[in-house]
Amino acid sequence: MRAAAERSPRDLSRGTERTVLRAAQRIVVKVGSSSLTEGGGALNPAAVAAVGDALATRREVGTQVVLVSSGAIAAGITPLGLASRPRDLATQQAAASVGQGLLMAHYTRAFARHGLTVAQVLLTAEDMVRRGQYKNAQRALERLLALGVVPIVNENDAVATDEIRFGDNDRLAALVAHVVQADALVLLTDVDALYDGHPSLPDSRRIGVVRSPHDLEGVTVTARGSGVGTGGMTTKVTAALTATGAGIPTLVAGATDIAAALDGRDVGTWFTATAPRPRTRRLWLAHAAHAQGRLVLDDGAVRAITHGKRSLLAAGVTGVEGTFEAGDPVEISDAAGTVVARGLVAYSSEELPQRLGRTSEELRELFGNGSDREVVHRDDLVVVRKRR
Image 1 (tube, helix red, strand yellow):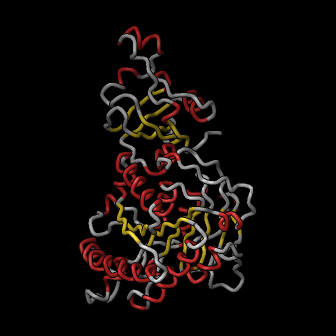
Image 2 (tube, rainbow, N blue to C red):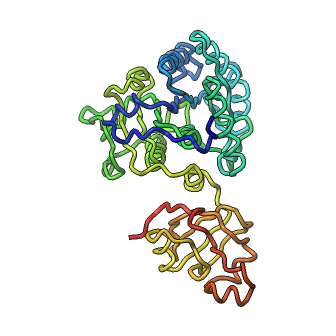
Image 3 (cartoon, one colour):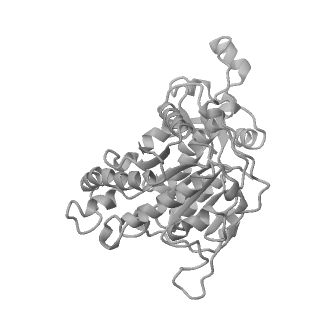
């Protein structure tokens, strides 16, 4: 069996829009709290069962499925006697602790009716921003899928703090799609699609396909989510663009349309992949790594790494910000402060300042042979914004 990092997702780029989803062999599906709860925030077992039925049907044709499910905090509202979703972090953590078990019990029953086993996978942002924990999460998910299990992923709200949380499961789903190298991502919500205006307005029209971010120019996207969830349509669009920018096509659709969505029918809004799929290492650097500091470059160095695909040399670095060790992820910015790349730095923040602006020959003369290595090697660098 191939190692997790070596999985080669199917090349579905030749498919025509939604046929890509129908042909996908591995998909990540995200469902939000508002789609799983009744009025007042109580968990709706029928909604959970409907998700289980639809995903089980897809599993029957051999597709591997990872479910990213919100709903733990919402599920804990009624048992704790709360009137609505709590606002303070401590009560949110308490509600998640009570609700997560209840949520998983319903999913276990829903999938068991189809002879499927589920597994609970709780993640925090820390698991995505540190390379070692990222790889551990990847290995665990890969092994579960190989064993025929349906992993059910949620943010570990019981321990996550404001400083180290995803904030919404849409972003988590996009990152999980990267981790498992999914062929497609499906974001289910309580709105049936993205519209060119507010969905309640009679002249608003559904946007069927988004082929590039330019297609969204002039479109007003709602930021506010429901009373039991944390994300609105803004988080769906951001997650979709994150995924498609890394080669993973994404569908945003209504949870009630889940069966039609998975069947590739014309529902929701389809976001076409806009870039080739990079290696997992580059996905991690671009979207999950927590930068420990920043390197500031002159214009020549910016052009070299963004257009010339060159390694970053000390001669082009003009400033160092933050505290980091050799091997840590750092942001790389131009003189104006715009982040253009991320990478793994070869020097610590103590070593680097005395090397700034020096050529390779000068570094060898001052520090000896072997001290002229790249500040960030091109294999450890990913461009996130190109300068024109």
